[in-house]
Amino acid sequence: MNERLNVYSDKMTKAYDHLIADYQTIRAGRANPHVLDKVKVDYYGTPTPIQQVGNISVPEARMIQIAPWEKSLIKEIEKAILASDVGITPSNDGSVIRLVFPELTEERRKELSKDVKKKGEDAKVAVRNIRRDGNDAFKKLAKEDISEDEIKDMEEQLQKMTDKFIKDIDAAIEEKSKEIMTV
Image 1: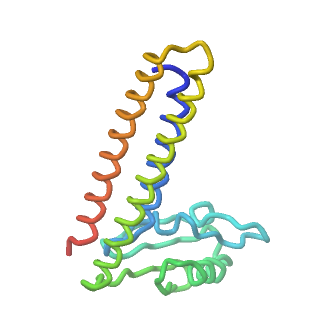
Image 2: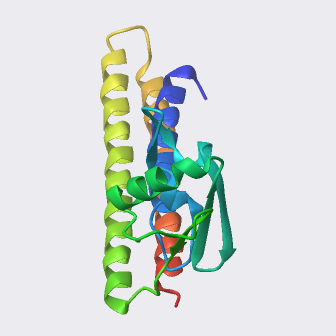
Image 3: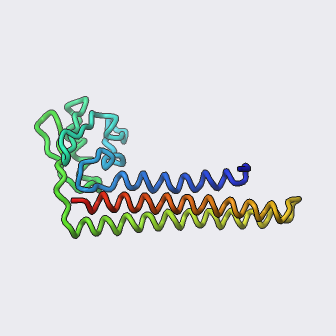
């Protein structure tokens, strides 16, 4: 694969990776420590990820436990979780914070499933836009010393790359939807 195609491959990979990272923050009834990835705690005036101020564990299927390295951080961690979009009220016993995930209702599962599909469609649109940008760039190369056959070849390779990423995105949508709908 030539370096002109590598640029578009990298962009498509980023779009796919962004989708997967997004999916990790969607809770599917089971406790997943990744729901806390975007939560920042005020640590001596600096917004710091929760993972850097305490130990996060999953002692049960529907519970996340956070053991802060400094007891004084318990209130700050609770405040950060409440202010975030995690949607769970933390409880603490003075030394650890627990987040208990409620069982998802059928309605909430369907909502989450729709959200998963929408994010997947957005990722597909991003990949197709990258393909369009690539094809436009290849057409401009015709003014340089590149044969039409080479341009056609690059367009075909870009299309194959696009098809592969669309297939991967579809598989990710399917997998996450199945995970959400499993009771």
